[in-house]
Length: 169
Figure 1 (cartoon, helix red, strand yellow):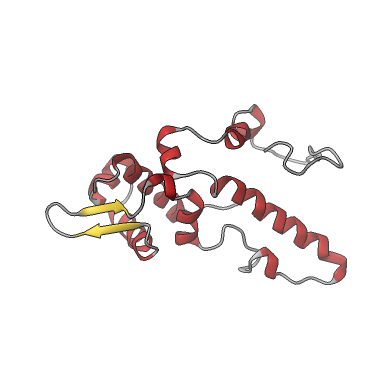
Figure 2: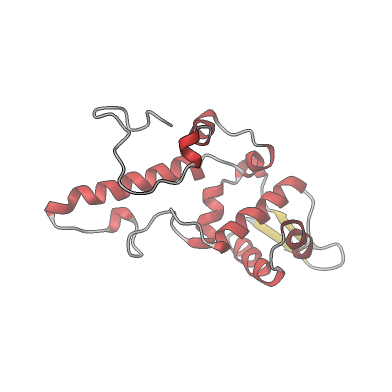
């Protein structure tokens, strides 16, 4: 998983807009609130406007607002609008990659990884980013020490053989 700076700024901006929904906020106010470079943020907001996630209104009372309720917009939708597919292999979606038969299982791992990323980003809505009231399956993923610890060096598999692939989710 890789979230670009642009994707991170987009997530921050829509979180701000979710917190003030249905009101508008200027790019300057959002930038000042989260110490973001305003010009870069404006480019991010333009992408979100083209993706119909935010609306823009000009004028003294203008600014940006979410086009829909924060409960109807997921983090995945925002990230796709900015960075494209949530998972790719050399610029291709995991299901589009072709390998010789001896490597078919590698493609299955790429597809599984995409599914795991989707199971988080497509389940968390913008209102949940504001309140922190995440679904239990999401809370379980970050509410353990291992989730916060970087892994270095060789790793042993942690999913028991034959277990349900979503046993930890």
